[in-house]
Length: 101
Image (cartoon, rainbow, N blue to C red):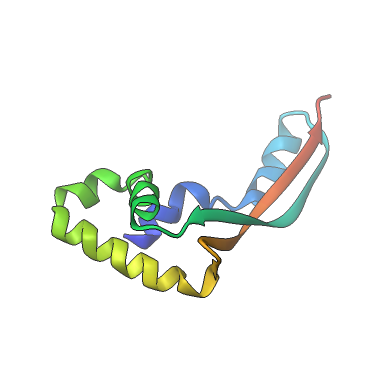
């Protein structure tokens, strides 16, 4: 399930470089960035995050007990990122820049 949850957000940006060049963009570059993502460290906020994932309907289909277990395990897993009342989680992303021809 975790791989399914990440899939829409884990596209290999480097694969876009030849595609963009091939359709006429020039000066195509990619920069790897790390940004901090902040999630309030509450059960309610984590629940909202989980239910905002593409796999939300699959999770909900499993029932409230399974959702509660996922929430609890997520809270425990994020504990190393706890700063005051928030989870500050570094996330990796790509900045892709190009010029239209």
